[in-house]
Amino acid sequence: MMGLWQADWNGGMGEEHWSPPSGDSMVGTFHFVRDGKGRFYELMLIEQTTHGPVLRLKHFNAGLIGWEDKTQVYSFPLIECRQGMAIFELENKKSRLTYSRTSKETLSVVLDEPSNDSKLHSENFKFRLVEISTFHLN
Image (cartoon, rainbow, N blue to C red; front, top):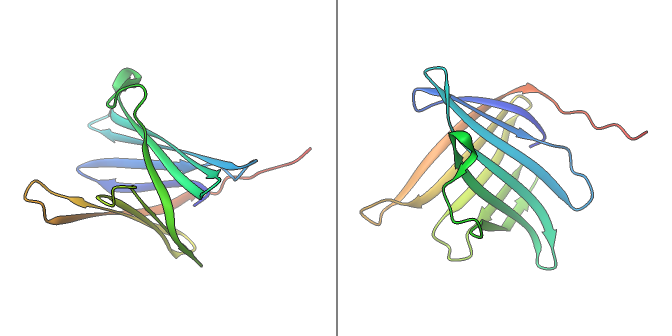
């Protein structure tokens, strides 16, 4: 997951960046640009808890105006991890994020969540690697 990733999505460009692991966490950001303007942002954190890794997520509009209440955070505990794949699921089991390294230069992120008609809707973000983050210890 570590690195800078880009995907064509919804008539614009999505860019996701994941830091190298440091301490007990990894930090990620997502930003979506369409028609030359930043449309929305996400701040993500994967942190080790006493129950295992949890992906935490918050959304923001331009101006860093939060979508969720300031105390609300979406928490997706890790439910499955194997070579090249990590699956995180909301505790209420209504939404799931699957990260799959599909090749050295590609990352698939699938969001599964119920749609308005209560059927499961999947959205697949097909990212390509732009840059690998480097981590140096002095």
